[in-house]
Image (cartoon, rainbow, N blue to C red; front, top):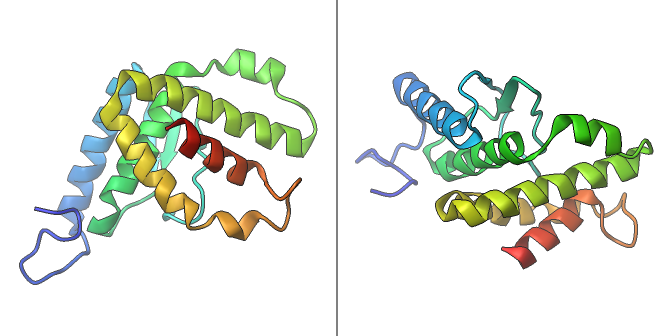
Length: 166
């Protein structure tokens, strides 16, 4: 059975029951990987562009899923969030994040990359999910190149380094 469809008629839209079950499972896996059972999650928005994660001390926001073909992407976003929760230190990040906007965005993306590399070494399956998400994001890389330094914005730089580091 592929991620493209579970229906004999080729339907790709999830039913409400399927969507709820997938979100519940994704939430449970995220909390397990992150090591924080008390995190709350919300599912809003769609899969567009690169996925910066609003990860706070006790709340994670993930894209809402209604298309079966996007299950792997949701797993990648959830694993990315779990690694940020598990490996990033909010107090240290707050003290060391640059003030200037462009530098701050680059710092956050490199912190995300660091957390993904650490988590990916421990959990190769989660790393595979994130790499599938990265492949999806690579399609959107050209959209942000206009507003960039040396031809690369923070999203593009992240994607190039993530692909190189696996």
